[in-house]
Length: 583
Image 1: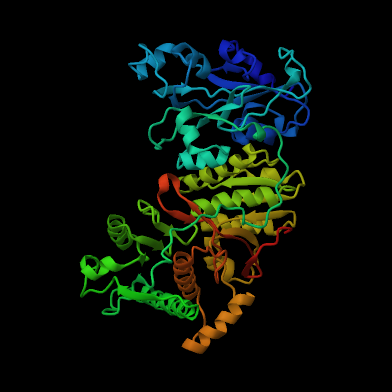
Image 2: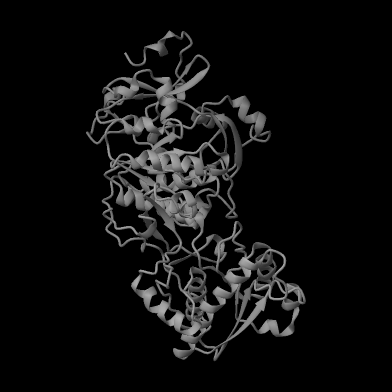
């Protein structure tokens, strides 16, 4: 019997609240709590991991012999991870009902929420310490009503989201970096609906808040896989227009550092010059199309004139568009001025803080979080016949990246997509290769030694594929050693290849004008200047540039616009290429 060791304990009891019809029972054994899952036909270890958001390794450790398979009717014990959550009170809730819902004593709720013993108010935030998140038992589609017989129960809880009743309401526990905007997209409900249902006066939410969400009726049940073009399903917005102006004034900030080359910034200066060369061709292209714009180029590393001095010039108030500095500190200074003076701000690179306090701010390069979201969608769409294994690095610095990817993946699954992911770690991921299945390993870390070892391991078996990060391409062990002929997939905000037909034509023009080879930085300069200016002069959003895809969405609370266009690339034979959907 796979779970006989569990019964050695004499300290076993079931919480009355979770024995109720709709929730999976919870057992207390030897000081630990376990969800009691009764296996139905078709369940696998990976299903349980997905259902309960519990690492497969923890389930294996709690159920001896389970790695050999599951038998219908047996009980599997899923470790419960208690946590402190913030619960937003909804109608008809009381201290006693919350005590039953989260399996915590009433005294504990009162202790951490001193005013709660008087009367709960709708929208009130309560801190629930050591909560056990309730997991729903859904009745199978066989029409059986006798749910005391657990063989009729179908387990389909969505990780971190638990059904409250049959009216398609869910409790959603807010994760790091989630906003009302991302949650509204996940559940296909409006931000206003979320605020009204949870009695929120502001849009600010915090990790561990628990929101009530009413799902649309049509989202219930399985949803057929959508047939969509690669990475083109994003929302398109209408940009504020400057087309009525006879001519635009555009400020372009670049780090030329022309008055000094002695402080180690030569490579930065070279990149600025390449960017300017591409921008100059964009300016010429705009002129050829009949668009009139006057460009003002500023060296923000000029030691004779500070950035603040430039901004304080009265003539600078005439600027219609500012193309921001490429460095965080300087970009923040210019962003503050642009916000104060209501001027459109264009970002050519991504920053840790996107500086989106200006409703007229536009990020032309897709940030890492959106790349992770797109990666999750593409894996579900293109790797549905493979076993997906997420290999966690164990490095705390990578945790946010893993959390964001998992959140995006589970959001897609919650919409009805039939896809599962196995959570493994670097020490045990090879265990999931012994079943002979075609497997795709996802490793979201830049720990070079681990990256190389994973690639070497997967190189030895044609059944294995690897998905990683764009930074891997720059590892000399990956692109500079013949013995390491690796292949892997990654998501990137741009795609630069001399073999691209469009780029070949532009390369000839670039060489004719400057007598040098085209660079990626020059293409970025062209894409940003040409497309940004054309947007504002015509209200037309181009979908592609030289090395970029463009598809914009508005950020939450009207704080600017973000480009969501990107590429799924495959690195193979020491070069990157656009991945075919069938690869």
